[in-house]
Amino acid sequence: MRAILFDFGGTLDYPRHWLDRFMAHYRAAGIILSREELDRAFDSATRIAYHAGTSIRDYGLARLVPYLVRLQLDSLRRADSRDVRAALAATGDIEALADRISESFTRESICGLEQSRRILTRLRARFKIGVVSNFYGNLDRVLAEAGLDKSVDAIADSCRLGIFKPDPAIFAAALAALDVAPHEAAMVGDSLSKDCLPAARLGLTTVWLKHQEAGGTEPPAGKVDFTISALAELEDLKWPA
Image (cartoon, rainbow, N blue to C red; front, side, top):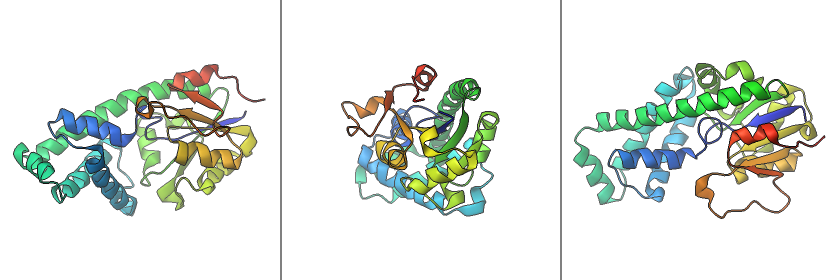
């Protein structure tokens, strides 16, 4: 094994899907939503950000998260649910609400990124490291801001490449940048459908970071080589020769 590829959101920044994390922070701010209601707003904000281009290219996490939260809130204010609209109206100050959610989400991310930075620093002594993510064109800025850039040899940012997971071509682009073959690399991610399965089809060793929300979910037989609950477990895995 010569290289390890990592997903970013839900993997390196914090071991939990961004949608579930945002849900927790909305609820902590007093906005009670169903996962389906927030999912629609989350998806709308994500699609807008994907098309923002160079306007957010220089955003670090502290600017990106408020940008996404305000897009989510704009979508929620147009939602069909009267309860959602009433809950937002009752806050009285949408800007203060956006700031509260953004700040708590960002603080949580910073803590997760610091843990990942220490792990990647140790892994970098043994492996080439790549990051493969459906992101907004500014992943290099976010990684540099968190101090992870010193341990990362290649970044495959979907908006920079115009290729989005689960397209195997985005993994192939990262491997080409690292100059390693698929059988010489592993992919670590929290999504079975976007990370593990397409990487397996390409011939990579696959490592599923199983979140608490996954519950009794099990990966398809033969499609995931390892299942972990924390990135620190990577240091003790018995990798294929």
